[in-house]
Image (cartoon, rainbow, N blue to C red; front, side, top):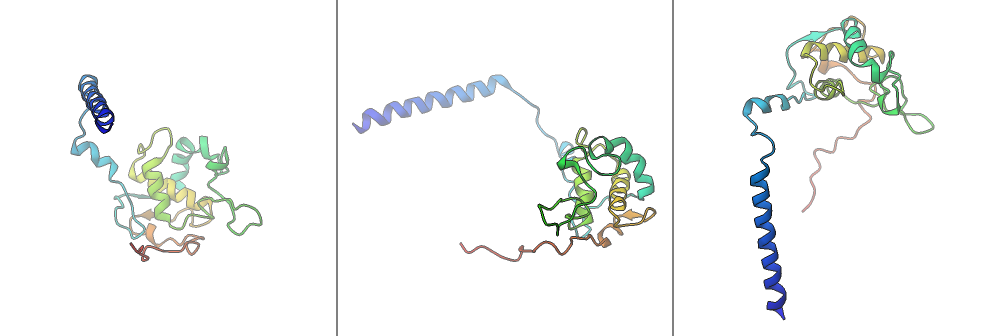
Length: 179
């Protein structure tokens, strides 16, 4: 009985494996990734300041960049065009479900910068220059009343910005699971 079941299953597995290998050899989708191709993926800017590029900018400069690249989704004043695109306002202490925006929820300004740098604008991620990312970050922080219009954001100043909800998270990175 055992041989009647195992041997046919084994034969089917070998046949399927051969079919998959042969089909992969024939299709040849994609191209190999080079080290230069991977450079654009290593863009993480940490809350401690590591990973920030050179450059800088102010909210005054960022308004023009925002109007061209961001307002279509986030609205002229950060009010958004849908619930997921609102970036100004919000209140984590509200009676109802809180509105999580840059000003009410995000714990670090570096996270705002990092997200914009890697994922925005949604239609062309990573298309902004480092200076434009600093400028747009400054403008969004300005719209949320966190910094002044002429505050210079750069690798040194960004890490010193105190976000309104900085204490709203519990750091559990020191807790290790018991295995």
